[in-house]
Image (cartoon, rainbow, N blue to C red; front, side, top):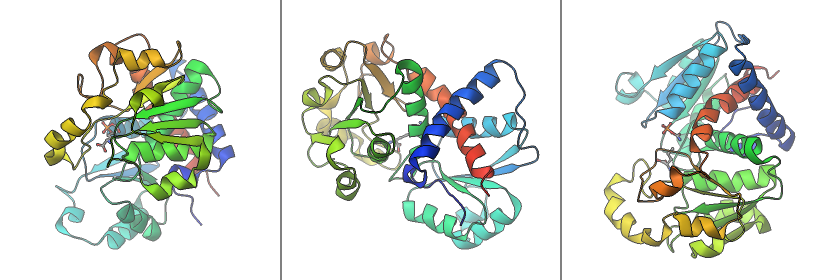
Length: 301
Ligand code: CP
Ligand code: NVA
């Protein structure tokens, strides 16, 4: 059985812990200018059905650091975009490349691709999850504040793909998660229930922020929901992360955002550009955490 990374729960707790430590090590190696070309001539196929800046650049750069190569594939110029079945595309690509990352809409499409792939497949964001981002977020928290176990993370906003991955991360890394969403925008109930009592769900952002060690949010309209922007702006009006909300958290609480951000919508400029914000470290850590992930998946027996 090939180990894929379709959700965070594809990692064991031990693998997740080691991966974060390895990400920190790989970051130090890169900063020290130490070569780490462990995967010469290995090739990653990168399929993007949605836009990306961080994900594309971090995976492509990561493969270059490893001495390998990455191929950017978009539906505009591949046969995937002209209706070649996903099963056939998976079989063909995985006969040539060593690892694949896929950013798409349906989690089912990713699962189907993985089923027919002979090489590891990475979820680079679906409508349901964004597990790569959580590896970077946990790394960032650990670098700034140490162990994340038992700490309280707060999610403000949409019960979306990022929120679902935060719920899975709470299980995997054993932290508490307070979630505040407007009524009607709650996360998937099955994902929520599986995480048990470590999750607190409310429609009151203030309650969710009390005594938090970290507060995070995301855009109100995700990719594919652009036509709902106006309706969502109204629904989420009370869910902007501003200085008042930050003040309810612990004094040394961090602010995170997976980016791209909309200043003065889900977060004020004062917060995202302020002293508690670690969003640039978080963005950078996509590179290091995903290199640790690539290494784990390519080294599997
Ligand atoms: N956070 C994130 O995944 O960014 P991109 O959409 O730019 O890849
Ligand atoms: N929830 C956002 C995350 C972007 C990285 C989206 O899916 O568009």
